[in-house]
Amino acid sequence: MTAAAKRIPVPGTYNFRDVGGYAADGGVTRTGKLFRSDGLHALGEAGKGDLRDLGVKVVIDLRDDFETEAMPDDLDGLDVDVLRLPVFEGSGASQSTIGATLDDLYAKIVFQHTDVVAAALREIADTGDEGVVVHCTAGKDRTGIVVALGLLAVGVDRETVVADYAQTQGYLAGPWLEGMLELVESHGVELTPDLRVIMGGSPPEALEHVLDRIDRERGGVRQYLLDAGVDELELAKLRSVLVEPA
Image 1 (tube, helix red, strand yellow):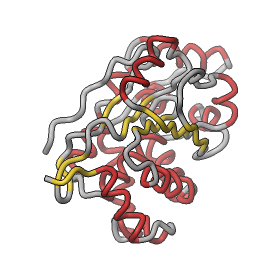
Image 2 (image 1 turned 180 degrees about the vertical axis):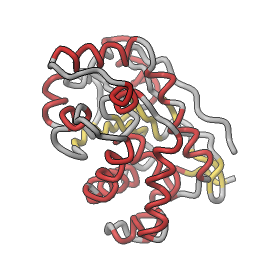
Image 3 (image 1 turned 120 degrees about the vertical axis):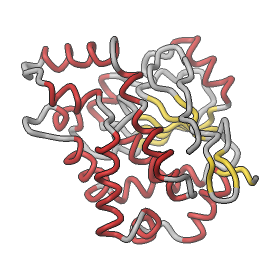
Image 4 (image 1 turned 30 degrees about the vertical axis):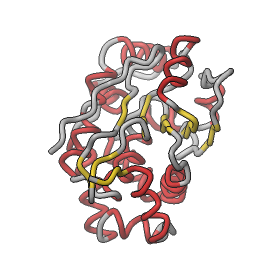
């Protein structure tokens, strides 16, 4: 297994990472190509300067309308194309639903919003040499699923992909999570241990469970994407943009 990518300290973010450097089919994932992040609403000039220096030209925003209106990305002055691909509406409400689990949330993303997951991977495949950042609010659930399926589709091993996902929890712990919990509590939602996991947790088993279900019900990630309408040419294009030959 390749060591998990480290956080890049882009001002205004807590969970900005480059998923380059992972062993994949025929090579390694390209450094400086695909980034994953939490919200980009607090970048400021320093954060925008970092995105410019990192070569980010495409931003794929998986948040719903409520989130983008409440915390619009701070991208003014950057030469970037922004693609809005909301994975589902009302994500903030779903996070505070009594009894919700990450297993429930991930099953919804993967099996009810397959078209948006496939569209996000198609968009990544179409970015050529340009740097692209995929983000939502925390950068762990919607972003985590899209990035995980993309990495698995180009041959990164499952252990590495799960390790990449799992490290998010450590980056969100502290100011990010406490601020989000205060916001939720201000809307009258009771703070429970389960809610803390839903909002800030990335336990490996949560991703493992949905990947097991994809394997069991769809015959693996590649077949899942083919069934979703991502054709062989698009999968080859995704591999060519994400993987640097050995």
